[in-house]
Image (tube, rainbow over the protein chains, first blue to last red):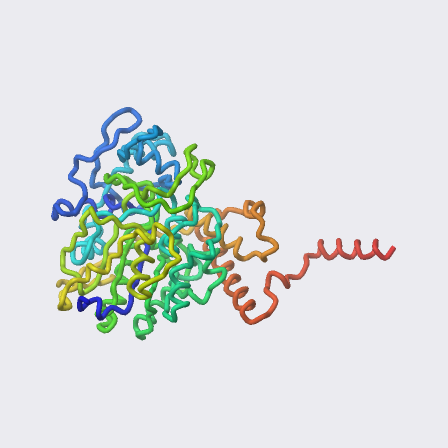
Length: 399
Length: 106
């Protein structure tokens, strides 16, 4: 076993909200051609037929209002550009048309093609270039938040493609229950009580003992009591907190992207500043879905999940067999045992089912009752390849 | 490696009066569902909910519901009746009960 894996005791997953790979990290292609980002030639056509190229004009706030549609039917339009034929091809040409449908404003709809330059996102882009960035991590389904996050917790959404309340099938246990059953430790840390969790009906309702707050995460990092597996949720709303005004840190449009940068840095610092924890922890930063924002890589087909979403649920007039992934999202793996500048190639396809697949494989070794998608999912801890720990990891100063 | 400074967003970024997006509204639906007693968890009741008008309102309601779900689970684990099940009837409902009791006596 590689030295890093031999020392690994904790896996921490931070799941942010609603930004595509190209929007956040696409500009890195200019400094590293191995990164499958943007070179300025990618474009969509708007509703007048004019070509709309990608442009480095993304703003931290105030640009993507209304929130770009990312329900199943809207994402289908974004990926297939309105083609509903049986042998259709994913072209990624329908993003501007999809956004136009919300405000009927051609000029505003073009903003869906905007992306950030690396200097605007110093935390995410530094971690991506200093550690490992994934060229092909996709949302689990072409739909909204709750069903995509379900894949991170259960390895499946149990046939759901929307945001409705649902209960899991009892055979397929959450990653947290698997850990509990095997005598290991796992926790979900939500930011605070007014932000709470997005995993409400199944886990919070029935197993509130699995949850903690972000201040408890910081305390657990400091006290050396972090569980084997930790899932961290950002703050989902602007609200008054115990210490005054609390800004949303999830980066969901139209929340301020810089506050999300600060939150990512805070999670990283909490681990980085504890030598014993830094040596024994891998941190995955990943986004739940693309939020309707442009990405140029067509989502690939994948193993069917054994469920069928009916046409009334998909809103496309067609059923969905969970046999195609959603749009590509940013994903970065951080550990002092990863070589600087690791770029995970595009022929290794990951999705959110890779999270429970990896946690299960490493900490539990085996677990038979898992979804077909999770069983087929790639795992990522093989990226901890170094024989000697790095001592040059970046530090972030939160002003 | 050099220390990287991470700037704060401007004060103007804070807007608790922002209209909540569908994510927050769905989080509210899920929490209201989870806060109900088992007998009240009917699909048609899931549609009877009041959307939040601002993020601040959503946060207040989410905090209250989250605390309720935690209390409910703690009470259930301790073997006590849950807050939902022990809720006092409203004055209107008490009046209806008194009327019905009077009729049955008659």
